[in-house]
Length: 206
Image 1: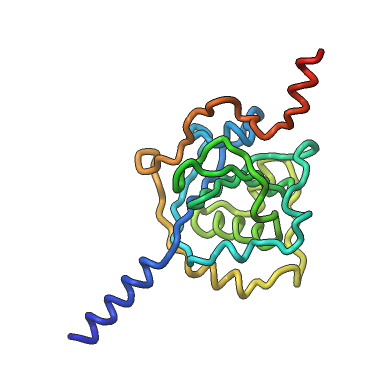
Image 2: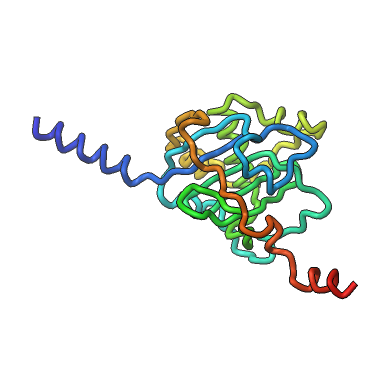
């Protein structure tokens, strides 16, 4: 009996050590932007994921130049990944992401910051496999709904074994709107606070 209790304590401790994140599949809409994607009204499916504490390290890039790519040419908001500190708006189709700092744990704000992680093949695989496994959305559909061709990851592009270990540790929980309060507060100024002051000054000069 003592051993069973000890095992139960270890299981509970292991569960308590897990981190959480919220993965949201966004609705397809022509007027959806990275800013308004933060609002709950654009959410199609939403999962709370119990993940290992160091799970984000799988997506940190060594090359800082690769963490912020221009979104002027292509950015289609498809997923929202909410962690304790940050909210990522992810575009699989354009292989890019935008990061917002959270106002409180798991509560997004409109403060855009430099990406602490980059869009990598590992991140793409994590999102596609999680959506397929726990949201029942095939990877091809994520591209077909935008009339884009699905291009599988190249063989040897990533270490699938390491990511499968991470994916197998995920404990999903489907969320309803009533269970989630991750909707951001209204911005105090403008969602475009990250714009250069020089742009505003030029408008005043005119």
